[in-house]
Image (cartoon, rainbow, N blue to C red; front, side, top):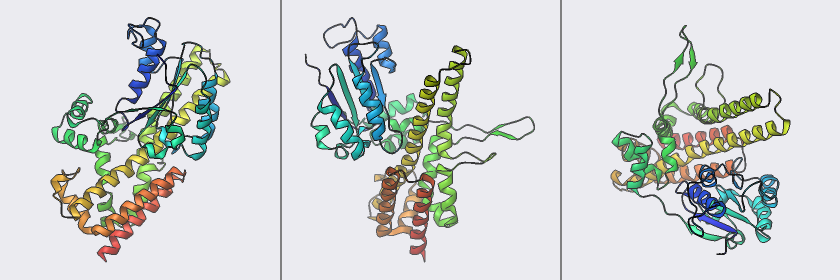
Length: 386
């Protein structure tokens, strides 16, 4: 059967895109398929494809707010033009493909117009409107549906969210995407101290602690004034000093940096402390890309949480029942913020958050963008109170 050279997987993040792309790689490369297009699922090729660790399967992630045009030209298209060291078909999987800007989309289009033989592109797309029709028209589209409440509840339980109230909140906040559950399932960790009582490692909040901090931003801005805007911005994306609690960004990127350092140390042992410059550079660049991606996701998550909270406030302000809100577990907070801002103020606040997202997509410095947003939100609340 003919193999389409490009596929668009359209749906919310985390609903099976990676599994589908890896299964396709296995189907195209399995040496002993059970039937045409049906991989055996047990051989080494299938096992490696399922882990995303097969030479003919590559994943490309954004290195910031957007996929960069340099990455498209130097990594994506070069990979497509090379003959893989193993496998019959290359499957090149672009995560969050709708985060291409005009320049990267135009560069990628050239690769789609003249596809190399035995190369299949798989594009993850949450919002098809963000990509040019010229790209989508060259792809076969497969729509992936959002997960239902029962599936999300089962996944939340599997991830260790045992408390029924927290699990119900997680299911509502997920909005059909299991990817959200993973960050909410992160447990709190106590501070680690030395024998002398000095803090060796600050306490880490849980994923739910972070979510509640995001939805309490408006109340804190009203209670503590505009000075809190700077504190809040640095708590999200700032660089902490020695002995201070790390920001959200630092907490989420620390593991990536530690993993990169550990891999480099392993390579040093393997190569006898003489890691080839090219190998070390590739590892360092990959770690840098992953850190940038994590920073972008953390800040975007904060803004998304704030948008959902403001949406609930607008719902309550319009006279709807609190029981219809996603954050129905905090009715007093919703009513307080709805009353403090009023319908016009809530809409203005939503516009400010969306404008900040657009600024961050242009690679504006994250902490400064958040400072400006929180100062504006504080001014909104203070103006109405005055």
